Figure (cartoon, rainbow over the protein chains, first blue to last red):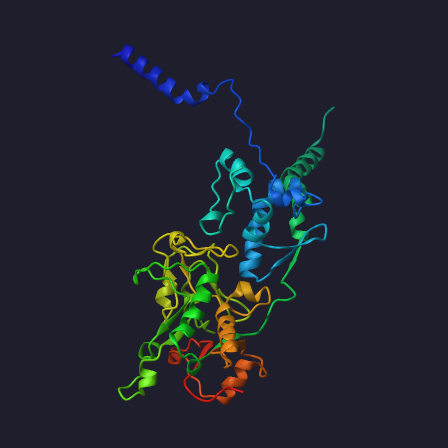
Length: 132
Length: 274
């Protein structure tokens, strides 16, 4: 093999470079996302529940928001009747964020962890967060 | 144990069905709670077969009358004020007679009409060209006649702006956020690269409120003890206020020769409507 030494050294450097992200984090646990729901509005609720059960919201909230926006904007509905019979106005900005006014700790916590960038906030006004 | 051909085909067939249908069957059983969910319009919502507006220009006299109405709309809908006429975003605006009704003007028009500003807004046409040209159905006609914008779908191609013969649509060349004086926290803003226009306050109608411009005009009229310059109602209802006014007054529409059937009517001069 011509220039064998150079090629092998080059390959070693390449492999070291490519695998850097893996061995640099090896053995260290990444911090798990820890969304918080301790906003003033939620604290005051007698029964702390969302429009649907927590597990459902966790896995399906994106579909639900997608459905809501079509139901409101395209079909002219406003009221959502939840599975337990409660009625809610379908609005991200006015209903969801009214309780979950801590966007940074509630939305961004998991979205950043899983590297999803929803474009809700390009238009919808996010709540002003007090830094406490 | 050996199996014959018949048994083998049976087992293979059943396994295939389980494999293909199995996961989707489980999905169907588990996932579809949302399908069962219910939704409805607000019972207080105002409804109509075809919403329409009458602009009685004789009732709008001072500069403040116009400003009051335009500000009410632009404040509620987070319409930015960019300062540069090239970037202007407008939902409701003023125009001269010759620009509003081209072909109708002549040099001997009364001074009152020649220099009078006319209030313009989206005409919510019955046959809207903007809807025909929109490639993503971001703009569409609702059952009640409102030509709506779904900002989630707008890709900013501006076909609708080319299609609209009334100049009722504005394009966001910049991020509008920094140019909004006072944000209305209950209504979204827009982003760079979408087209926007008047939506006849669909979000207020859904809650049982009349459009912001009409409300502002009514409030001003109440204070001054006159009749409002803007009237809103159902064109398909013969007893509605708009129909009453239209049946007793001469009215014109913008560029009706184009066949788009605008829903905004103008009354020029004339008596008080009953």
